[in-house]
Image (cartoon, rainbow, N blue to C red; front, side):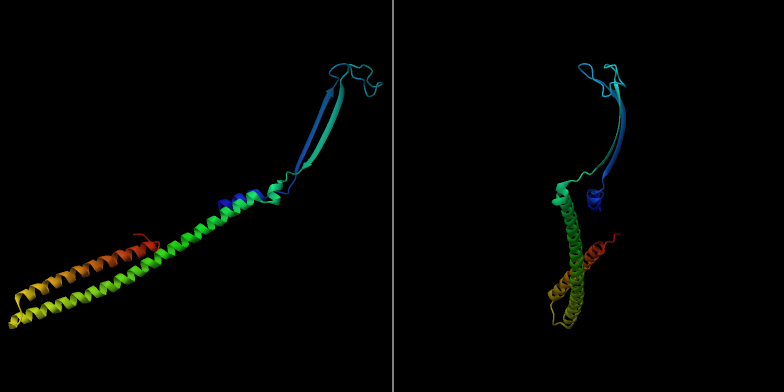
Length: 180
């Protein structure tokens, strides 16, 4: 936007002329001595100052030839405009890439979340089976303790997966341009 205005200032009004009018009246005489009058009958005294009136009309163009032929300043501004457009396009690509990465992270954490939930269910089933074996006398108390440990580890993995999934959802929310 700024560069477009700067370019417009450089190119607008380039071929319009400048018009000037000046008018003056003065009296003149000789610097070093007497001036012989143009009309000796009208001005017999040589020391008399002679009246002068003039009017000047002017029409002038100031054409910057370098700007017209090589376009140096205009080319420089056009290059700045193109650079700004490239920066804007790069920013759009980066934003889209960030959005896609966070979207993929949400999908991956959802899969991990689902796997952690099924691992917890399997650990609970294994714990229940260990308790049944111990009740029947075919299992050892150490198996029950090991099954409890597996349930706790599976629960921790599940909670970590939920936390990671929530973090990735928030990152997607922010990447979408929203804020809490």
